[in-house]
Length: 213
Image 1 (tube, one colour):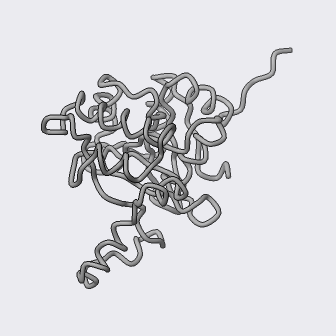
Image 2 (tube, one colour; image 1 turned 90 degrees about the vertical axis):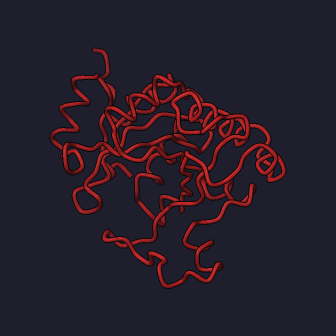
């Protein structure tokens, strides 16, 4: 009898193929579903799907070790060091600090916001992490502020947000510890778990919950 793949195995298979997965972080956290794919396979068509079917903020997450190699810091740390301590988010409603770092554009894009421009920024950043991963190369080829928002993972043992969940899946798939993600929104609020599952079934996309780790 042919063995049926688990949802995690399906997600890893789809990531390796360059396809989308959907990750729901959990009812007791944000209660949101994010569309994700590995940046190695970024295309303008995929960014369009994130814009239209996701609707949230398009972000590119990176593991903490690689972030440190190219000098990336958390935005909260940058703001504290800039003297803007009073407006820094100390804790989100679900209990931990945001994963946000800086936003970037590649130096060869135009405005940076188009699907093609964001694809170029994401693709070149993914190449940097996978091959060079050097601070000098990062500073030479990118600038901030830009239109691709970077997130830094704190490790799945420290935080179980979409950032860490996505990065852990990429790592388990044997790929570089980077992931592109976008929240799925409805008309006024985040897409409900039921709605996200319905979308996943319609599009034949693996749906997994944060509790898998």
